[in-house]
Length: 283
Image (cartoon, rainbow, N blue to C red):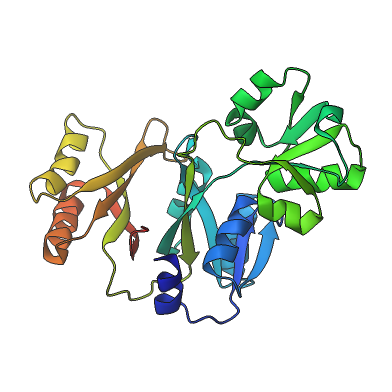
């Protein structure tokens, strides 16, 4: 299904796609799997990803929006509300953590393992089993792999993706260190303009509600009354307006007329309704 999404919406031209993180990050892996001919533009922080898209330096951005274990990537919700961009596709990536080291390193030599705090937290059983190995927080999984290779120390290793090992020439000492095999990250493709997609069956919106009793109940009722499947709800504080919140909703659009009626009904009671994207749900 992922490749079909690439073929239908995006002829295999060499798009420039921004990601947050170093080359070899899981965002890079997701991009490579779904857009194998794209030129990947790594950015240090999420705001730089959106700036690159705003300026036209890239054609699109591929950003993680939530992980099945770690939860939402809240900074990306905030940036989607702040910018007038559109979500045109979504993809899911199985997260597989590899233990990477300088080629020739033996496992018994390793004394510390570097990685992003979220990745380290997802590999607790590995550290519980190997008490002589110390976990060290690093800003990025792929950055940790690059650092280990640059240092060239056999007592250091990194937890990162297999792609990071390929990019930086590291050796995979152990595979699938993650505690839970049901570890997936949902990525969304963001562009400056909405693309017409006749196969779109999912809608993402941001909603601002007055701070009055029962408003969230009323907002959710517009979907329940029409038997629309609401698949995600997330709240985020609104900047500059203390104790006010925006709600991010995902729902399935099996009946387009019912979905449009629900949005019109929602606009009647909400302070604002911003459609973030209409796209095909990932399988």
